Length: 196
Image (tube, rainbow, N blue to C red; front, side, top):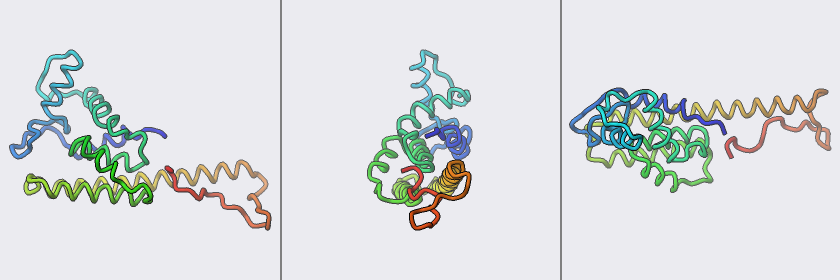
């Protein structure tokens, strides 16, 4: 499966915004969602001196998000749309939290139901935090936006899968549709859910 990392990261960056140092945020000073503490740790790991998080470069931001969030939630192994949901929660509430919710998922659900269920559980957790009174409206809007984008990503993927299957079927039968034993046309779209 092709990685959606860059597309998902672009959406996360929009949600996180630029530099922030809200006194109600236990994460302290952050830039594009990367905290000062996390940035210091990452730079030390690279053998670099620490510096103010607002000086975070685009390359550093991409590397941190790829190795510390995307890869740690195994997003490349997740269905389209759900990868973005899990990645965004990993950024917003921590990788461990995102993985716990994912582990408890009902894998018999449809891809659309998985996306909605994941975000319902995420929102329920956020509402239980003491900082909800300060950030609740923003968090609620963020989770809804993530769900909307994730469902759109899934729909686009499903549509592309159907078009690919139809094109393959047409290429294999240049003289017309395949016929079943009773003379009925065989379907040209797959019966399985994309991503399974």
